Length: 132
Image (cartoon, rainbow, N blue to C red):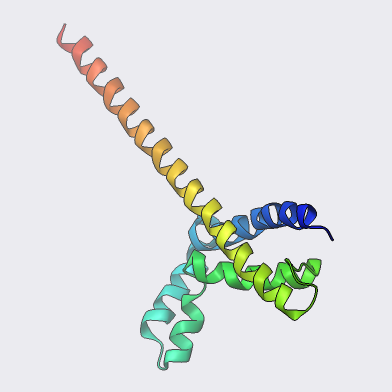
């Protein structure tokens, strides 16, 4: 696979990785299992149990495991055609996926802020109408 194709694969494969990692670690659909994992990660009897459950609560940690799954699924290697290509691809995919998640988080935060500001403006306009 030529380098251009590898780079395209890097940026495309990072999309489902970031999507899955974000959904499992942030979205409402996985809230109950995530809360259970948070409790187990804080109250586990051994460090191994605590760390094993923590990985389901941290998008960065979880993205490593999702990346391993996608590398195995797609047999994706980056730059080198042997086992070293898998390692380079793994860290590159985790990096790009986490950039995507950071940008998505900032975008959601900005949208939430705008909604709050709009609500405040609407409330003050309604109060102004009531007074006059």
